[in-house]
Amino acid sequence: MTAMDAIEPMVANLERQHALYADLDRLLEEQRDALLRRDVVALEAINERQSALVESLATLERERQSLLGALSAPVRHLSDLIALSGDSPVRERVKALCEAFPRLVESVARLTRLNRVLAADANASVTHLLELLGIGESTDYSPRTRQVARRGPCLRLDVTA
View 1: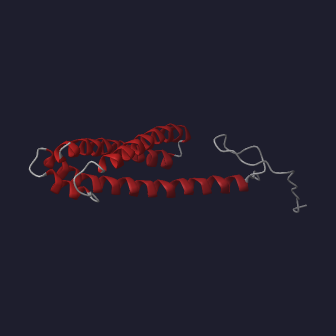
View 2 (view 1 turned 90 degrees about the vertical axis):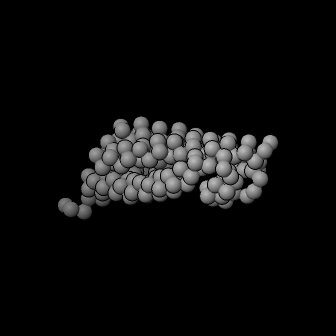
View 3 (view 1 turned 180 degrees about the vertical axis):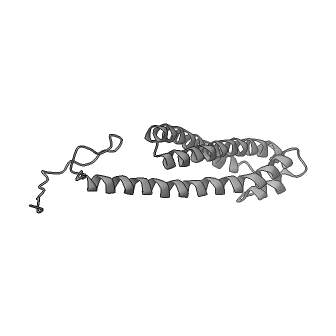
């Protein structure tokens, strides 16, 4: 296998990863909007789609890791592939990835951090409301999506009388 033969599958893999990251970026924007609307139904659907995307990305990353050994020189950054591609037609595709991929990954990271804050805020808000209503974790009102350890009997004293 020549160096060019090894580069083509690597670039194709990176292009597929880029497409999935673009899908994830759009999905994270949907998730942000659903978090702002506190739309639980939409969030559940988004989380399922997000899980499938992350699994696909993990598969492609494992494939990419296995392709690294076939390259003629170590590749630590996307820009290293430019040098390996020489004057081949793949070179322009690699340049395009070098320009687009870092911005896309940064956008995914930024949206992930923002959504984490929004989710924590929503959780704190709901927890506070439940506390105000006198409904704590010792009740059966916990979300069905998360198992909560059953606690023993809960004694509540009414000291307002």
